[in-house]
Image (cartoon, rainbow, N blue to C red; front, side):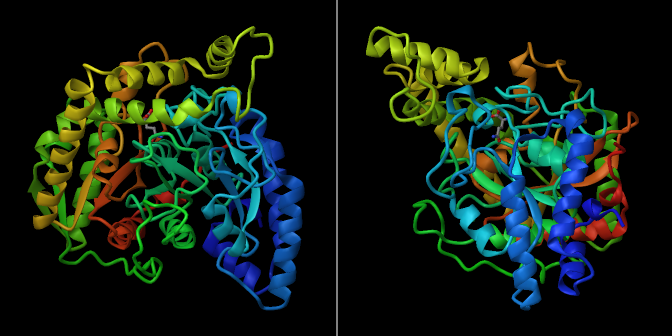
Length: 486
Ligand code: GLN
């Protein structure tokens, strides 16, 4: 048996009945990494010693019948989630040597649930990007076709899962960074409701938009991982104190009577790949056959979402990134003669071009005289976008759309054209602006052999409903079982 190919729920069963040990499973994952990581480049750092130690404790716990849901399960962690004693670089030169003195709350939760940490996965620098080409460390390749990007910013998280170099992973989503790479790599990715998962220890990009969430081989695994990381955290003032439902128990697979909203603004053919259009159409047909009702809806302010996001996110980013001043964290230019020079030289050499572009955009949008015209207007649009969703959820239960206009593009194809890159987020960032949950589930394969994802968005704290709708889709299709051939 190829242990690295297992899903989390399959491995759980085998571990529980002692058919395999976590040490065997963890070793199999590292062997897989030896074989395919040189071509995929999903990891920034591997934590094999920690992993084997955790696997040993897991085996001991299992032998004592003390099993938590993730006991002995090897996972990859996006490199902007603080891990105590393990470098957390955000794929940035400025944080290359940053070793957090504490764990993020999600890490506390994973550790308490018995998980094994395989390593820290690659991403676009500070999560700014849609392809991992903005990583200051390396470019991750799409396991389905190494000439293509895996998506981003959680490209390492998605590629590592798709290439079976971990059983599941955590990513973060500020404008689509879990759903878009999940879609491009043929895995399931969930962006939870804003406030559902603690952001304590998540290095901030745009604090009012960021959420941590799972990337997994199927919906059941995504539900298990979300269950483990969700919940109130007094250390995060934006975390919401609301009971976490049993996500796995919600997976009945039935969508009878479910009202699925089809937003007309998301289902145009403008700039859309015919492969994506037909995969999404097939998904709609499947849902109809399964007894769901398709309802036409409108999200009239969608056309302003990209513009609003690319003002709000950089504005928040420029203030969040002000802390990297060469004094308190990471890189410091030691040659500088004055303090101002030290700031300037460190930040100029430590931040990559996209991060610098966002800092400039954000500083401009917040500056006196422009604040009202840009930042304030964008915030007002944000409210209108949220209201659009609220009105839509009066008449439907979930919203169905593509995740991205096209399957994964080629490495280098969009690097000289930031605007085209920004437009690839067109279907995902509204959910962040509104704060609602969304997921991507594999729904097709393009002519060129690349995966296509289907987006399902839900009302606040209604993750269980979109998970169940995605589960229903999985039951009727084989896409989640298809794997990249490496
Ligand atoms: N691609 C978007 C951006 O570059 C979203 C990133 C994200 O969700 N972290 O900002």
